[in-house]
Length: 139
Image (cartoon, rainbow, N blue to C red; front, side):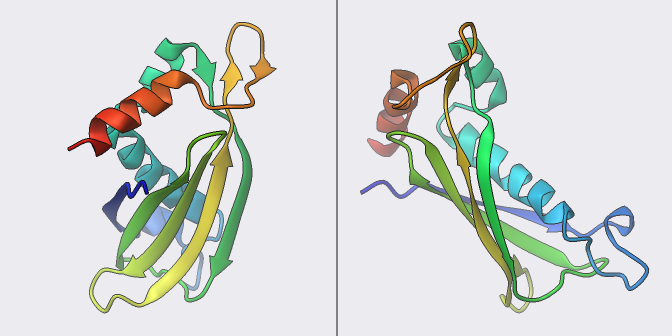
């Protein structure tokens, strides 16, 4: 069983909040993205490596469940976990308060491989993904 997870810390900046000092709901996807990039780097397949491998990885689905609001100045921990990789990249997320560990948000995104030159959807993940994961998870 693959268990690849990473966590990033983010302080909610002023420009992400509304008049009530609550982070605007759309910014949570940005927080997911920051954790997703850190997770992809763990197995050497961040966006530059994707591009070099000849595949595009659009997000085709995302889901968020808001539990509590993130507020201006709050430090949050965003955890990203690789849930599936054989046919698509499904990444789960959990956002928690960095001090009291209360869950604020959870969700997931699904990315699919598209051959860059032909724009053809790939029904399985390219071998570079599997190879990179095997190298990382072997240790």
